[in-house]
Length: 237
Image (cartoon, rainbow, N blue to C red; front, top):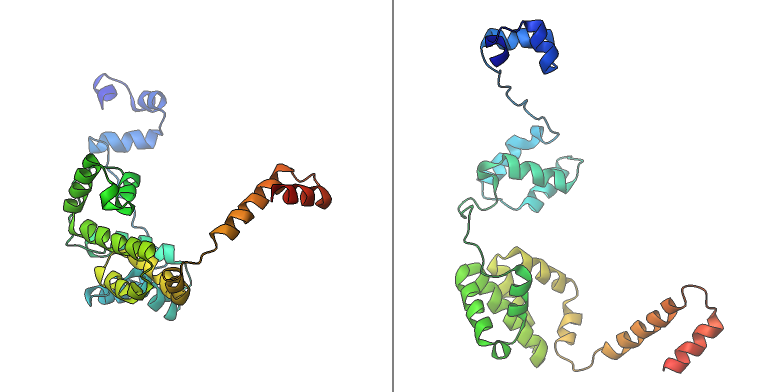
């Protein structure tokens, strides 16, 4: 528009700007740059959107469950494709619409919070205890997560495997996805986990020897034969 006001012809404007003559003509006719509306994106999930909205409004906000129901209806694509489209298209664009979009910034980094959560409270310094208190007051879920982590740590150190079922029930009621995922893995081999939380016997010594053997093997860079490897292993033991 500025070039047109300076007296440039449409052909000169097209050459200077580097666009087609017809485009220049159309823009000058409208008097401004024509804003283009984004084209609607079509996906393979569009046919299933009415069903998904119905299930969402019925209270099913578990995307994994919705994906299983879609597969049962003949949906052939991946879980990731369903997850991305649900977050973009469903009401509020989030699984928990009542949760605020913006939370206060946490006082420490995630790895520092992990260290504070896993340590025994009596071993924390005064400054670390103050930081931990700030974290627990940051959000109710953080406080609940800390209590559950400390309960599991206590089971591990005190060999209280008999409390495992109670702890798993509390985790399932907590609605904290990360802990629920961990609990689901424990459920798959619960008796072995219970034994590990009860018996004083462990395979730490065996794993230490395995690590030493792997180190000796890798020091040979794949060039040492079995005889030399055997001698080095026996000498190390």
